[in-house]
Image 1 (spheres, rainbow, N blue to C red):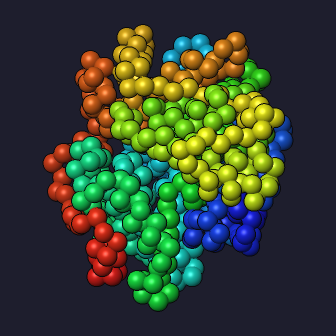
Image 2: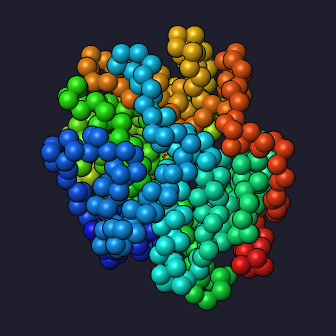
Length: 462
Ligand SMILES: *Cc1c(COP(=O)(O)O)cnc(C)c1O
């Protein structure tokens, strides 16, 4: 399998190269040159597979030319064995036609574990083969940081630097980053906001001359195709449970950077019978504005009760635009690089094509809390605020469709007590493996929000 850039100005690469770089050198995102197709017969066979076996069948289609199947199988088995639920990604029924896909049984209680637990192990595998060291540098406003640290803390060839805004993440999120053990992990609290962290990361990637010779930076946010690939699996896992009973299923996905829902889009392209993909946004609603009114422009960044979806630009949308513009890479590039406050549009035909696949709904904080309350009162089930936006959006967009609506539960409610308490409920306890989180010793470094402070720290500690 070869991967090409959405901007069309660099060479095709294999999975190993794509994993080790993240962003393509022309500034675009890597996408598979062709999408593997799954037959109805294969779907039928996959229906009965346990999660890790299904993951192997799907992931092998994307990486087979880079590693022997036996190695891949071992790595995937190890990855999903650390999840605390036997089913890894269980589907819970709320009521007829409405289901929750629980993606929070990993070590850090958010869906990002599905990809980052695998990414850490694959990185180590390829780096061991090359006898090469890399440094992971990433900015986080919350969940990515802890999932990346947890996924890569055992990696022998990796040093990790995760930047987050000092005093601006929740206590549970901070403690999840500052209490990870491992000699190669560094949680850096910057005296600035999330945008400062992200800008420093971008500038460090653009000029890596501060690193020792032979070193390189690796990106672990969802621009890295490895993350998308791992997430395709749970769409199949959940969707296949309904195979035979329903002609198709729909998914409602709490969306920020468009990584998770893009994985659902790929599952559909591979041949999973998917009816609608619902983009749930909070008040940071750039994607909802596009789907509902064909306006694509920047809005203000507003903090919300679902912080992991607080985003001005959804980077992975570029991957979908590549399809929408039928592979016209010049148009993709000009569309994404001219994003500003002024609205851009796509043609009426293109907009209609996008709307045949995606639906969208914007859910504000009050409605998020009301949904948490309502679902608790009706079913005794506590939603985290991200998941609540997905439930609400799924209900708004279901319409006359007969397809079961599967809502992705992207985080465990114990991580986001503010919203739960505003809904008038008690925050559920942290699961057993994190029960002592609040008393664990924290390890962090506070730095000024400057590129020099961060690169200096990396130089001293590599
Ligand atoms: C990261 C995250 C999201 C958004 O996912 P994207 O892939 O960025 O769209 C939603 N919910 C939670 C809990 C997250 O951590």
